[in-house]
Length: 162
Image 1: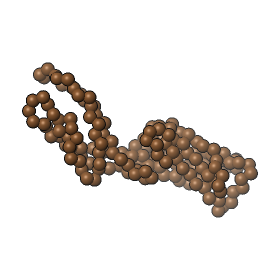
Image 2 (image 1 turned 180 degrees about the vertical axis):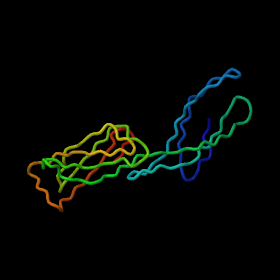
Image 3 (image 1 turned 90 degrees about the vertical axis):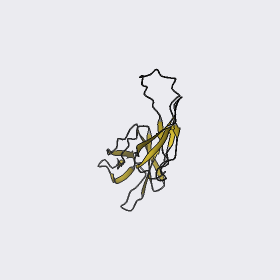
Image 4 (image 1 turned 180 degrees about the horizontal axis):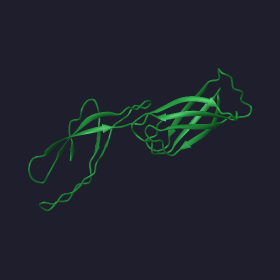
């Protein structure tokens, strides 16, 4: 298989399967390949496009193939934050509003008034899932209505995303 011209709207990277040895007449083989597409760093979005390939054989002309591709992406929406009833933690809502699960370790960090709070690690966050993360507050940190909270999420596996 050889990569051919791609849609301008969805750049695709095609990683072909290993070359298949010659098959006897009437025998079929399933070949699995990988298709990747770049995503925006801060707000990845799913997209659609067409992968154009040419299947080459030992005899005859290459066979053109056009395969529709849907790229799905996770997208984190950091929601409301509130001080818990115990006054020792901040609870932060996070939702994966994208169409792709985050199936690898992700570290969430909160910062209040220049003080970095503990890190919360999640192994998985499914598409559509809403979770509440609890961050411990230092005893010396006083909160007011105007206290600014910043949050970040970093995916620890390749490719790293923040």
